[in-house]
Image (cartoon, rainbow, N blue to C red; front, side):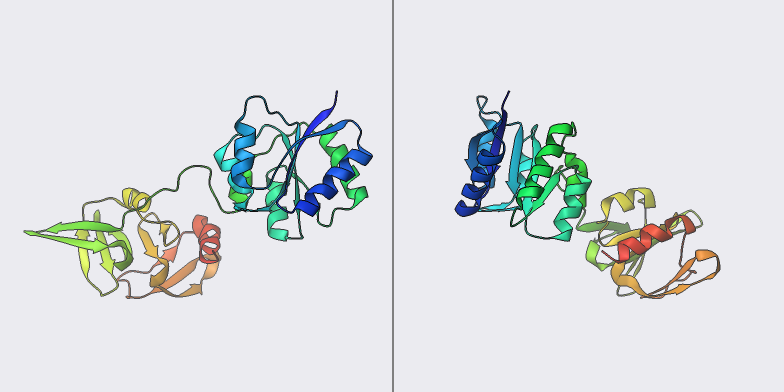
Length: 254
């Protein structure tokens, strides 16, 4: 039984070249469709009568990157990506269990890719693919842009961008702003860490959350501990818990 092939490629010459190579070298492969964009590919895959066992998919399409296809529709076929050399993209393919061919496509490499495709039962790991390219299949979470502080008879809105750090001391939680204002807050650090953007804030210990912009310098201490010199200065020794050091350093490098 012939394997049905969909070719997703926005360059007409590259599309024709691949069709010719497949037709000449693999008589049991049948090209049943072509598309040149995210939109047209999603449309083709959405039609109940259309079916592909294998999809040859270029990364850069007429209306964006092919990764958007996986966000919009479930892809049940095996996928072979075609791309110019890009280590970033290749790492994503490997993470998502996707085979790939480097352009210009070599006949021997094409034969190997098709052979692997025949033997493999692996489906595309969408979550791993999106994670590897720094995206998520779920809608992006929205974080608070401001917090309301209540004390005495006043209500003070504090923009999240103004928060330097939040810490807990003797069962009381404090919020410190970049202009050195100190507020007592009712919200626990467990709740705060969920409401603050993790790209900008990190919980360095059970008792402290800090903004990346509040980190002036970092001092290495014995036992793999890290001491943070903050701006404004903290009224306590601000250290990163040992168990959080690796994640903290990765966060800094983003």
